[in-house]
Length: 166
Image 1: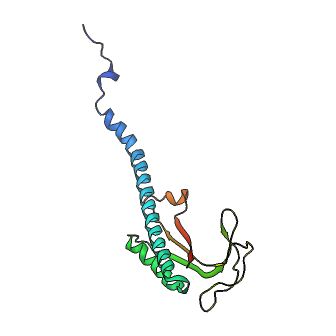
Image 2 (image 1 turned 90 degrees about the vertical axis):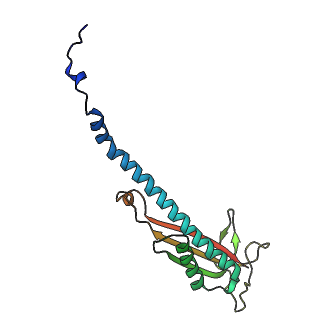
Image 3 (image 1 turned 90 degrees about the horizontal axis):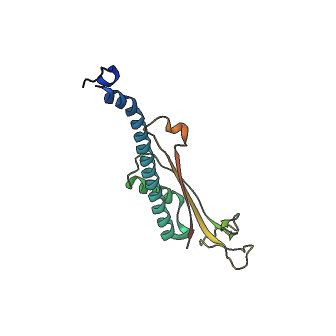
């Protein structure tokens, strides 16, 4: 029994190579996006590590801590964790605040921190006394591997924490 000569069935050499050539850029595009997302997540984790180290330092030092020391701790803590990008840290406080609301929020400063680093004054809620708080905000600019990523999302990665000093 002879097979009919059908040109489309007989000459299929190279079809897989052409299919791969068409699909490979799309696969590489997705792979680069996954790698970019992973690197961004690692950078965010390293930044959070630096901010956590600065918060622990501020907590251990108490209300007499200086903003410059906390800022240096956030920057150096992030770089020790492996973050190579430049970290910008902004420290506000220490200052006296009242905690109110649900969820808890800091309201305008109740009074200034005294020379002995204590808070005086009263809060709207009689059961809550004013406390000394410090807010640490740090960020870095992520440099994506794929240039289109900066068009899809912000490349500035922020991290913030508020610490009650004791």
